[in-house]
Amino acid sequence: MVQGRLFVFSAPSGAGKTTLLKRVMGELDNLVFSVSHTTRAPRSGEMDAVDYHFVSRERFEAMRDQEAFLEWAEVHGNFYGTSREAVLAQLEQGMDVILDIDVQGAAIIRASRLIDAAFVFISPPSLAELERRLRGRKTDSDETIGLRLKNAAQEMRAAVDYDYLLLNDQLEEAVMVLKSVILAERSRAHRLPSGGPIVLEGL
Image 1: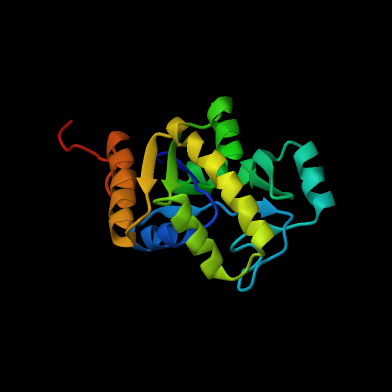
Image 2: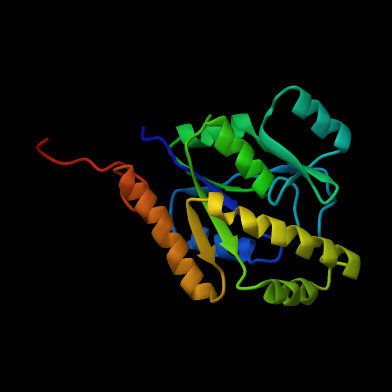
């Protein structure tokens, strides 16, 4: 069976990454989302084991100490981690895995070289537009928004370390570009747009 490809996505909070990924995953086959573990509380509408595995701080620390995470990081006072076993199993099944993590986690995976991956950074058109989007959510305090904007400025500087930089200004254009990235990576690995292997008849 053909090996799947790991796609590591990072973006500042409010850059529209979740909306973009959901659109692309709805239009391309053979893509699965890696569900991370987190110690933060669920937001309205979020479901356990769908959006995140919501766990206690004690449970997370136990998993971390057992080296169960491919990467983990503390962001905005909460822990986030990616299950090593779950990702490897999905890749071995031939699935392309979408990993949505912050720049700290991406740097850990990049440095470890445990899994070959394509790294994609999704950026808002500007910090001013990012602030507008964050305030439009109406879920965060002014203090939290200020912290997110400060972190966003630092995260956007890390974009130079990624294989691809995608500007999420116009959604339809961003969807087209991201689909092109995934399809190009599949072609580079001698795979069909559907994700299956290319077999040349007569050879």
